[in-house]
Image (cartoon, rainbow, N blue to C red; front, side, top):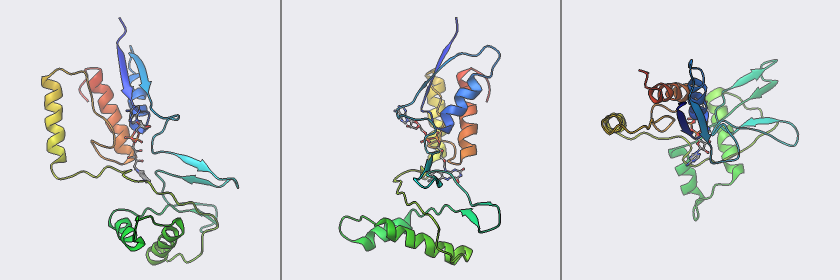
Length: 186
Ligand SMILES: Cc1cc2nc3c(=O)[nH]c(=O)nc-3n(C[C@H](O)[C@H](O)[C@H](O)COP(=O)(O)OP(=O)(O)OC[C@H]3O[C@@H](n4cnc5c(N)ncnc54)[C@H](O)[C@@H]3O)c2cc1C
């Protein structure tokens, strides 16, 4: 009888797990359950009315063509920076997008020496978008793994909340979860 493996979440971790589950010689039936209307999770591109493409998730500085002519720059402001801006904003703590853009431009000017104003820009506020591991995270993870194994629960954990937040960590985490689900040593 063909086994069924249910993958919860179609972000990069879940998609990597599906990929690896379907690559074994006798693959199980794979059911992917995604709560939103699209796959990809935090990996998401949006195209503005003028055709400019922005990344809402992972992105680096990617120069295309002559340096500086068409450079896409993602500036992430977070943690204490945002808390500071929210404190400055006063009641309600809502920071205007124009204020965030100004802060991003200041950072780009100070850290990269780029003073040119952006031809196009998109400001997005993602709250709690990247898991912040607290002290004892890895011990809790090991304890959870021991519990799952001792209880023989057919459950494998994967994704940014567990074994690293970078895209490559998530892909590896999905691969390892797929191996565990198949009873193989990851
Ligand atoms: C702004 C930003 C910039 C980043 N930049 C970089 C970068 O430059 N380089 C890098 O390596 N990493 C970067 N990261 C980190 C990386 O993109 C994320 O850690 C990674 O994409 C997370 O993937 P994931 O599949 O674990 O989780 P997610 O992308 O959160 O996917 C989880 C999926 O599960 C679904 N889901 C959740 N709950 C349920 C439920 N109950 N039922 C059904 N579906 C559910 C969600 O809808 C989502 O589709 C960035 C992240 C952000 C937010």
